Image (cartoon, helix red, strand yellow):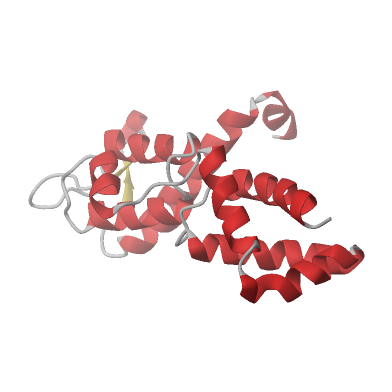
Length: 174
């Protein structure tokens, strides 16, 4: 198994993990009365409702792709999956658009968000602690990350925000 994992590209591993989590954990928890059944060679399929399959392979695949390409977070994917299971027949991208579920991925927009949060007067004390360095800096990075995520209402792309936040703190923290 370790050899197969080492041979798989990171994107394939991430897609597989995302798929496993969404289907194995999230879909299963949303559908306790509709267990996954063996679908022969095609794999497992969710039982069909009276209206037809709610979470078909095409829509699940689209949802997984959205997570893997960074368009939505896994939390947003759970919300979309919940809507699908409750009977929303729209494609996942349409559901995301209707509900305003998207990640901010534009680096300049993230930079402006980070700078805006750090420069707020109510965070002056935390910026001073960051400037002291050491353990203070690490704690304050996490503090500011939480404030940026709150300011974006959870829509800031976490990995990109972390990178930008460190750059902004380095610049403003001097």
